[in-house]
Length: 257
Ligand SMILES: [Zn+2]
Image (cartoon, rainbow, N blue to C red; front, side, top):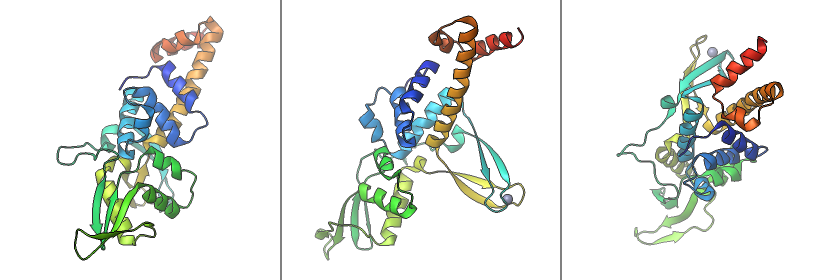
């Protein structure tokens, strides 16, 4: 992994412009992880992708994350402040993140299912599906590699060619197994409302968060470049190469004439 300079981040933003959030995340990762090909990055499991994004976010903008949500019970607006370590799932020796693409097997309800973890290509394929159940079904269909209805002997079994609709307990079990194996893919914040004490868990998506954050950063830095270039005639590349502190110092000088 490499650190991205302001100029490189700006270039990545430009490259990702107009693309879907899933594609934008891949463009960012391609810039920061040149040791992996874009094809490899796209096949990282969603949890692996998010772990990489969290590391990149920490290096770019620090560890603190700020978000705003509303209490689902009383609609009170709540400001959230948390850190990357708060939401990072550390893979341990006893609970390693399953390598992306590696087949997992589950036997339940008389079915034996081989499946893999969802990756960015799978997410991209369901981005335009608005119905949650339909999206979930499509995602599963892509990740399930084979389904066998078990015979009397555990060795023989009848392959099921069209595995949908799968029994709901089976679908739930696969989803649960995926979440266990790739915990970083499903980041949830345990929240409690200071007004009505309602407690709930909210999903946090680092890809969406970073897309918005980088958009705001770009607006800000382009304004700085614009002001400094107009006043001093400096080149964009030279202004971007300055530390934020030095850019701010010059801008303050301009403000106070
Ligand atoms: Zn509340």
